[in-house]
Image (tube, rainbow, N blue to C red; front, side):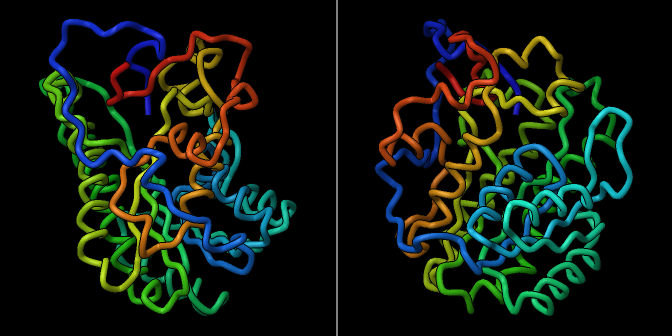
Length: 306
């Protein structure tokens, strides 16, 4: 998730964006469940940022949360580990199971799912949050980085969801939620940072495919994407600190994710949601509380046109 242009910018002369199955507020049904109390979530890459924000929102209800992430030791530029995240989740009222593992490793995924079921008795929600990013153009992108993005983003989403599906089938209101964008097929997006675009759009295709394949099982599959850049340490350190004032905090994505996950799984599925649209459908109109700073000059996130 990165900026492209300002939220309030005017339309340019670029080709009109073609989007596929973008979920607007009217697509959101519910809530059916009053909370996520007692529900079990498996979240990939949830040691910080948006993944941790989603975990903390669920923890406030008393949810059980498995974190599958690689960050066992502090990163020199990114604060927090899977263990500090687990402590924060439990302090918020949830129960945490931190598992150090790589979403590219099938054995690690299988072990994380089994440990979750052994500890909490089942799985209600799979959140595909883990992602790798490299915005270099094709001739500058080395194939090692290309493979990393495909393996973590698209393959990791497919593999973790696949491992959770047998347990989701037994859940009361099962959801798969993926952090991926609307399928904007406008050439100016498809032709920009192609390696990353393929990896992120692959995640969104998983959402559409899972939703259709699992419809009869009552398992919802949706994606969520922020309208604006989100102020995370990853954005600060890899993109630029100058974007932080033009960003929103991760809590806006977490609140939108919560709204989706408490909706009826048989009715709210196959959507590529935008966070702000979800919250507007819930009646929220004041988004100032999510602002990282006092500015209206918010940066529109990548893959979105004004």
